[in-house]
Image 1 (cartoon, rainbow over the protein chains, first blue to last red):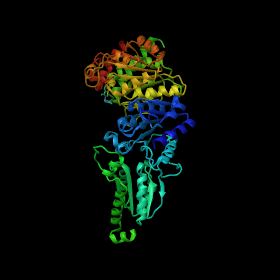
Image 2: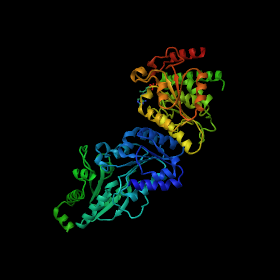
Image 3: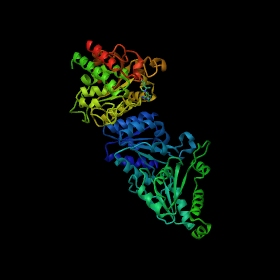
Image 4: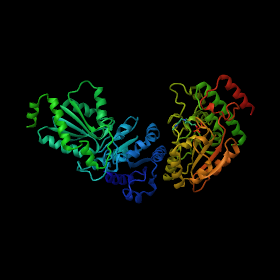
Length: 320
Length: 271
Ligand SMILES: Cc1ncc(C[n+]2csc(CCOP(=O)(O)OP(=O)(O)O)c2C)c(N)n1
């Protein structure tokens, strides 16, 4: 996703002279090409994210389209007040890029994990939060973010994630992408869990449960049209995210549900528990530890689906 | 503008600020009075900001980073004719856009919303760099308070500005030696403040922050600074202009009574 971001930004910056890239001493060779092409529109702001965010606001106030870049925790909660006041209160078109979101950089330790960023940013008025599911969505999302006249947080994974899309999809902020249609259950996946969700969907379908897969890339504003639609037509709707179960996609959908009349569907949140992970281990290891795996998704979905159907027999029938 | 005229303007700003603090029940009067002479010099001498160019992309910009002195800024902008002085009557009333701390886009000439200390210098620096990118030559002045220099983000901005040689950026520090709850040199080791800014790579000069000639001269030098940003350390007195408020930090929070307003006006008129 990182490389797709850098490549796409370099492309877009040649047509849009207002784009400025600000990096917080990150992305060592990632921006080499950009820097050669647009040296006057690149600033390495050092390890000083608060200042960088304020600078971005000042640039936007003076007519530019700044993009700030660092590792997700440092570009979000480290400088949360600058995001809130300098960018969002002024409602400025700044694109904030957090890389290594969720558990992507789990190996670097809890300091570098970012499983709370969505929750922390979501309460701030004016901001849009977009979590692309693969590198193609990153490109589409970046185009949308740079065309958007307000603050956008783009939450990226790391690099070399499996591709779901063959071409760059047109991304509209606040409008989810249906990846695969189904009838019984609907998986709403946000961000870098999309490949895992796709595997799980395939598996479930093979087990006879017709599974719809949606890349629910925008967490704010929430795609209420799609939610109304899926909650009235599927037996079970499941959200999947590499983020705390508090305040992320599942939390947003739960809030939305609480204000709706009773819905046809049951709802299940697949997310991280409310604990710090302490210990070594890469993303896959920590995903395993927290049960963010294909088999766990499949098992939980079947269990919840069984509850919806009321009796095991129906499920047996459905599964056969 | 001639210095005598600026002095009269400063006196009027002080009188109106004191009155408004009372009528709108807005605190931080000492903080406002501390920086009136600086504001008067910035708007009536140094910067090219007026009603006609206030939205022009190449205008000069001023940011009140010590946003709690908004009252003095509102009065100054009204005196400058950037918005109708009638609006000041509503200041602080429920629903008014003139709140205790500035609201973005509320009045012409208000460049940035502040109030959380430690944000303004970064925003001003961003504006300066945006000017550079767009080949505009506008100047950006940022007024900070001494207590505000407790914030790490100020020094992040200071180091970055020096690295970028942003000669169009000027920081003015209202060094009144008080912050909210005590002496600013005791709460954090702020002094020697001028040397700190110099050590951070800025051109720095100290002035009497109530001497119009000295401020005007320092601003002139700062706006012609070459190769480096410029810091003006303005030695000031909190509550300046009203004897019973001067250097008394109770006026950080206190709101004057009607009688105190009258006494203050009498004193100011006599100066
Ligand atoms: C980040 C932040 N913390 C705390 C405050 C509350 N506060 C308002 S003014 C002030 C200090 C005032 O002292 P100084 O900054 O020196 O300004 P002065 O009033 O003396 O001009 C404080 C702590 C604030 N506005 N912003």
